[in-house]
Image (cartoon, rainbow, N blue to C red; front, top):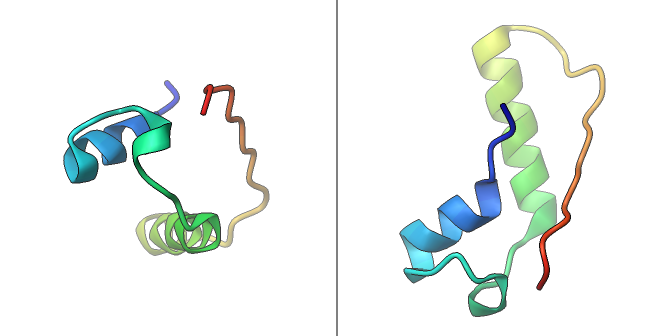
Length: 56
């Protein structure tokens, strides 16, 4: 099941899921996801798919 990182994080940090209420450093976000995945799996990341269909 896909996880909606941006709305969930926005709700926790900014109190809203609206994307216009917060900015995202995508480079840091992707690096953090890759590091977390490698740490928990013990494997190198083969590929990453990014799908963002939200309206800003």
